[in-house]
Image (cartoon, helix red, strand yellow):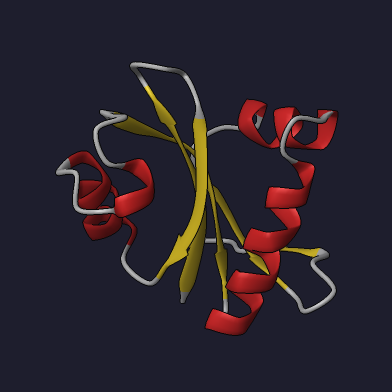
Length: 99
């Protein structure tokens, strides 16, 4: 499973959108200044993530969310909370996962 995530800098309040197979490791890398695009801009906290079945789907969804940045769809994602336990189908419709 792959995760698409949005983190927010507690310093500047700016957002970063990415995708990964290991979200805990990736956020730690952001906070340890090991990611060039976010270096020296943290610390970061997770504000949103969603789970997808494949890397390809995760990258497509990451790019879709990047296009939302700055509009109401982006704000709605952030308001929905840190993690939504959903898997997106290729057309990005929701399939709820019951745990």
